[in-house]
Image (cartoon, rainbow, N blue to C red; front, side, top):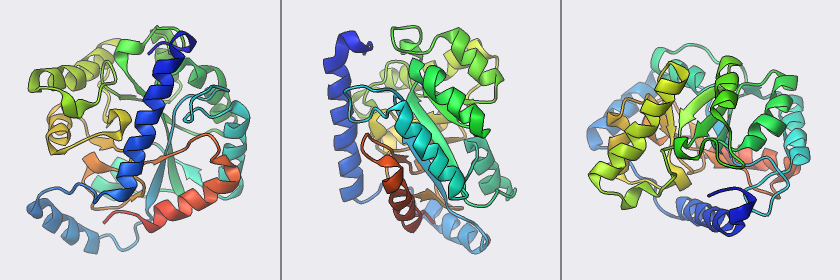
Length: 273
């Protein structure tokens, strides 16, 4: 999945992402075991002051052909909208600590995430985020690092030092549901090990490629040592949600800042337990 020389592959990938997202809106969400749900209900009663946290998922910030590309201009307008609407971007780590330890979050918290590790994040999104002093998370597919159109390790280390949260997104960005056990471990644990070696610390968070998952995939991510994982299913993080099924709301071309408010309102209405 190289950049413009493989435009067909990128469009096909975007089509698969869109299909999985449609399924996520239609199908009943995957749930954990009954025991975990009972524990979740108990925890929910203990967190009456919780404010649901929507997570946004971006891909390439560029004027590209893919429906999941977003132009730098539109991204800048969306950041301006978030600022004017009073949203407070936070990291996934802050959300995790708020869930696990009840540490406070700012008013109207929101998380900005970017999948795949495109070079356009460094070139176009990062300067805009710095202007607003907004944190973000970049989910890197380690096997794509250094390819045309993708971040280099030097850029990833610079982002890491600047406070950008670096998460794992497998090695080769496959649909994890179709892999055998050995391949599944290689893609999930392998990406975590590479990032640990390159950055000097282990990534805490994982994003499922294409948002595609099943109970077997979720269990593999849990066993790999991550603290939480994000999906492609819409909604907002609740205080008792399975941390390996945190919802995300994908921003696509044409969303526009004028529709972003509607997307966020819908996400908050669909917040987890």
